[in-house]
Picture (tube, rainbow, N blue to C red):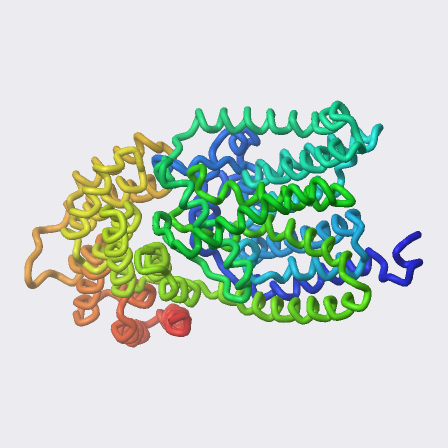
Length: 633
């Protein structure tokens, strides 16, 4: 009998309603920009900015970027490919990247609803389970953050494979399609291995309960095994072609860290209304959380055995395996990138498995308790939706997001201040950025005795922007010497040398960068700027206190081209005060000051420019640009 015939809502209408609610809750995220890792994985990734052959995506590690000398050992070609296709279709507009994430999440919620229905849940119970999953606040990191797409794609593929897998004889095509989906999920993120464990648990339950012979169970799992072999082979090839960074705790520390992390995840699930970015510091262990983790592990083991023996259908046992299999890779038993104990995004696939378990457990409730449980679940979903909508808005405000992350970070956690510094640096708030990087450096030294190379490099860029080129040079030379195969550090070093007008040293650093990365756009652009600036500078007379206005303008152009704003502003200010300044130079001075200089001096430049016959239109355009800069803060 169909659900609608029993008086229940139709599946299609409920699925559409779930998707609509989820999209509405995450609508604030659509106004967001590129945040945190997005600036490396999307806006600066060569294989994203320029669509390449499929072999490029499937033959390299996830973080592979020739600007750097190594990357974490992740293999996620499908995720990078989705970024590249979107970049090709829609350009660099972040709205479409965010929209894709929200739609994938909504799709996962619909798939979860149908998985629950297939497992035997009522339509209403399945809808409530999918709704709670879709609005769960701690999943907002995966959905509202473009780089969180890895978990979305992997989980969507796992849920689709779970829904499609069929153990009955003659359903080989369905099992093959499910295996293909799992393969795609694995190539989006490694956590999809939990889907393979869930399907293996499904077949194991059938064999143990006499629903199938062990041979039939193995036959049913053969397509999945083939998919795992293909994945392992592709990953091995990419690993050999790349340069993977070592990370993680020493082996002796991992068991205790795993219990600590498991305890932390249990606490996060018990406290869903306070999503956080940076949770804990790897290496710091709380005895209380270790105890909670030990109890959780023991309870999980007992529950798993009970489900294997007593569950009425295989889906509950499969869901339990999904939860355990998804959490296992992020318990630090194997090295993973990052220095946090836990992350909200790591709960995405486990939350899907828990939703299935919760929906199936609700069937055991007495009839008189079902209405109350449904009402409580609906109220909880409303609280989740309100919290998640606010959190999605926080992700859309990069500065507010990083200020919150820095404020909430643990005392030894540098990442929040490092992220805040990068956001401020992009907005040219150099004094504030330098203070944030100094705090990140202090925390790194307190924790490990060694600051991050990128914190040091970014701090040097701030110092250079503030005119402290010698201080910047010392830091960048140290970073480049410690990481000689990273073209990015050589380019930064070349930039500071150029701003010091040491063109020979700048060209040596650029030669080192281009030897490592011949097509490096940033290096090629800076190289051309250095060549032009060197030629123009050497054509000028030695500096004099009373220089001709045209000479001062020429010096200002050189400094401006190299980003040496303080020197450029000093020379352009002198040009503005000169009675014999040409209109062309007044226009150049106004352009520089409007875009990068002091606003008061920019207004003075515009006033002078308006006095020049024929330049009124240009002055009006620059006034509009200055007003836009003021409005942007």
